[in-house]
Length: 362
Image 1 (cartoon, helix red, strand yellow):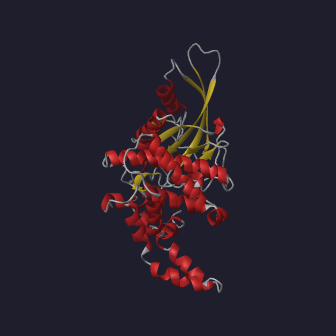
Image 2: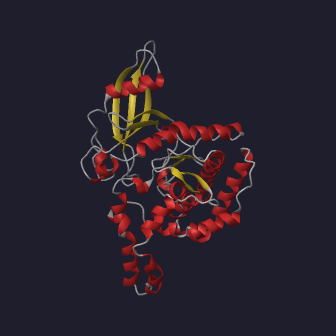
Image 3: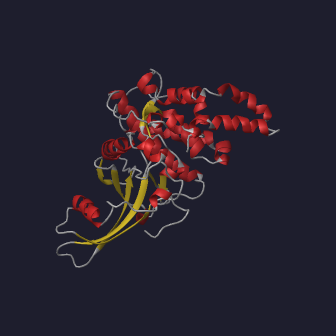
């Protein structure tokens, strides 16, 4: 692999020994089902920029192949997602987690079901790129069609209003389908019971335990900000438990009036790829059943830039909620529709999530 600089995560600079032409033949045989497929060449490079993701290692494979009777070679570009193999904190934390099981379920079962329901209602939607190969043993691997050759890319700037509406529209439709399904059968997504708080030792990491303390101390160090310090002091030492309680509420303390959905769990700009005014969603390792407020609050702090938060937040949240309601009606939801007033009440009740979401990136 030629890539060897600070632009990529260090654990993606060296290709694992198992990742080579023989493995790619196994993948393409399963995916393409073509006779006598032969790998001519396979090149592997890091699949994302440094800091774009945390809970996996990702490679891009550009594979040239030919088959019996073909007049020439063909090329396919794939994204390979696997667990860290280098010893260290990242491997220790993630190797015993359920994140790959969750993501495989989302790509192969949950999201295809959501898409099918929406398409039957006349919405020809696609949430994500297909997962063409997956396994959990002897190592955890997922392989996807590469969106880059299809014209999609991760934004390296703040999203504009139109792009935010596209992203929130897809989230709202996802939420609407899962809301209806959960009303019909509250237990059907019980396997989606893992989230950030269930990753071994995650809640003990410094960025989880000390970030608020650093923020409060910073307020005290700046003369112009000192008056605000008193509003945050009561949260010191309590914020993490509030976060755990909020995320696990559906499993441990279900409320009759809360609007529960399948949450994306990590809905930020680097987990979206855009092509004009279309987007594809990425990274479902933290997907779980919870309050819809979690995803929308996460979006406000991790998807909206500062100007949008100040001037367009309410407009975009209203757009999201109206899309959610319209989708419920479109897919045949017959019960009482959720209300904007109650939605806002739940946002206010869980307002501390905003402080949490802004602190939960390693």
